Image 1 (cartoon, rainbow, N blue to C red):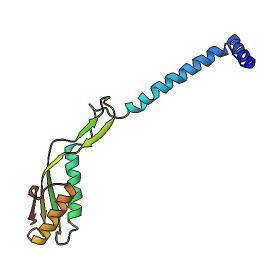
Image 2 (cartoon, rainbow, N blue to C red):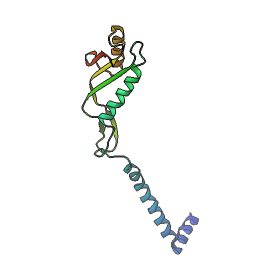
Image 3 (tube, rainbow, N blue to C red):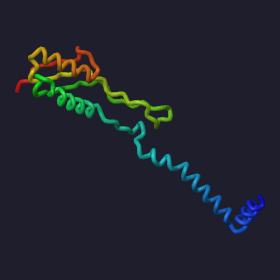
Image 4 (cartoon, rainbow, N blue to C red):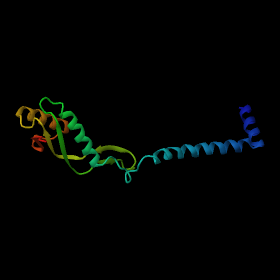
Length: 147
């Protein structure tokens, strides 16, 4: 105990205690400010540009075209996807923590494929589209692709 008191007294006499307190304060301030600096790089909700509806639609169309063209009998495939509303991000009350992202709602899908006149192929393509997008068959139209 006496050694500890002597140590603090010696620090106080030569200005070391003052330096130690300033150093501790600087470290504390840095720890408070650092997390804010890292979050500043991430887009805030108001400025967030989560991919747009056009990006979502284009990506989904490309993925569907690629997959559907591999279905037996489908052949060459083209896809048109229509969506209703934009992608939305849901945040906590603090406005910085994203809890979920709501994708655009698919209104309908038009698929043009070389096998669009074959009922078996139409059934396969319809089932693939409805399962992939989680939509009803009423929102899917399959037609023959002619070029």
